[in-house]
Image (cartoon, rainbow, N blue to C red; front, side, top):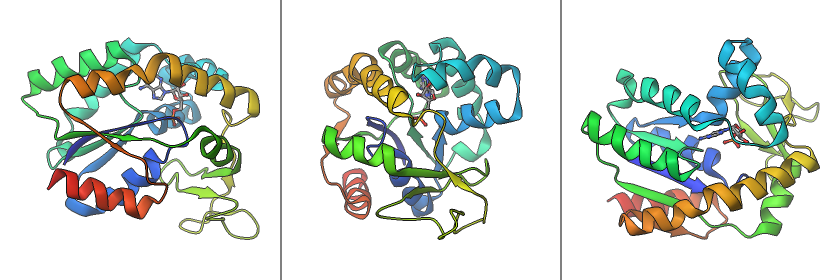
Length: 214
Ligand code: AMP
């Protein structure tokens, strides 16, 4: 499948993408994970991105497009991909459209995860993420806790609160989403690609995505 997952931070894009990757060999491409890996590794990209990310702002479009152009050309994307957290602005969506046309790739669907704001806020403050860059499993201290001593169940690394999950950064990320990313719903509606799903259960969302792509 070739899909874009849209939705506010905490809407469940990462969780749903991880569950869908086993379905038909499509890979999850999370620009957030790529950037967090770059920050940890201390690369030039990471050094540039760090400040934007910690403040809850978006990293400049051109940097993101450079990452995505290279990533979509990787051979493992041939079976399909789930774009998680990209595109995030209208210029990114327009650049993606051009890039896909150049690569002769057609998007199947754009899935919008429509989750109420109170649920989003609760999820973001209770989320924990595995600190191992090769794992990044997502936990929630209420609904899917890590081990009692705070470790990832899959790989044993500490499951931690992300640097951008302070109350201040969360507020900023939600503002950024409303201002810059939510216009994409209209953009993809006009393209005839949009499907909105308002379920809160990731299993139910996965089932609906599978049904939507046939
Ligand atoms: P995420 O894990 O998707 O919530 O992304 C974490 C942070 O990485 C965001 O708050 C942004 O600072 C940055 N980021 C991720 N994806 C993008 C993107 N497509 N465009 C710009 N910034 C991004």
